[in-house]
Image (cartoon, rainbow, N blue to C red; front, side, top):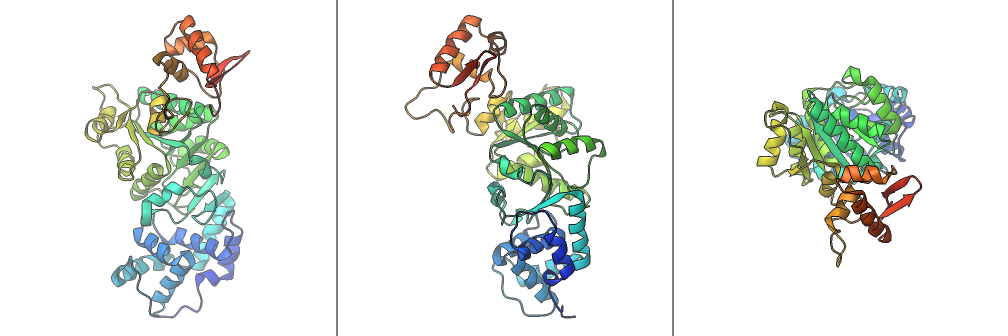
Length: 405
């Protein structure tokens, strides 16, 4: 076998293309190495993740090249010699500096940024995927959007959603935005699209994880939606620019949605819906899982009912239920995991008033009464007590939840 004269990391064309990439990765060699790994490996490839975890991005790449050149390679604790040989054979066709440099140039033309664990803002939750965590992510839109997912929920569901499913997805997304929660989904037709659109309409942060390259639009009819998401949040992929969205990549994409989100909610799903795959990843990672019930006669809710019956998913009927999944016991997000020690939960009427309020929009007494199902007198009484506790704010425009209260 021919011994490589130098590493692809030393190729001047590749290094120049990597340096022109928008990326928070400061070290030029690490940036180039993460670029190479983003082209070499397929999503969720645990052997690549184990190798990079053991040797670092650049060190792992040089070890692969040494193996190709016939040089002795050290024992890697997480991999057998046979596993290393098998994966090197898979990667060899892609280990070409000119091709990788062209991927970097395509990313630059599309305005994509390259994110990796070495950079600030990388979501900590992705580490729970272990060796199957992404080696890098390509981001179209705000590079800091990933850093805004500390308080986030995934809303997923059927592509062939019913009007009921799309309505519920939009309502949940809007209520989450009012509570300052980011919405994660997959950019598909149906529930995903409804969740993204409602989040954008409410002025919130939404991130779409896609199965193909972040520079591609799939489905094509969502070109305008993807543009809006990129302007206000981000379209994210671990597949290199230009990559095709295959079935395998869709299934692997689902693990990112589940991992990066604080909770996953299946809004509407058939018996074999791909959303159940996302739910499975969430359950495996120990993430809170919720499902929205639908009509018992609807085939598009069979998957949701299955999650409620067989997988102990939490029944979700409103945004406040999702906040409970996230560990926030009321819509104000005042406490994680329950009320502060020594304090009782508020009166049921007070909870209904809190549920009727948001942190952004001011609401009139009449509006709060309609939303809570209480009389004007009951609403006024509870608002007065909540104002004394610093839980709500008032102005000439009405009432809203106190920020951070």
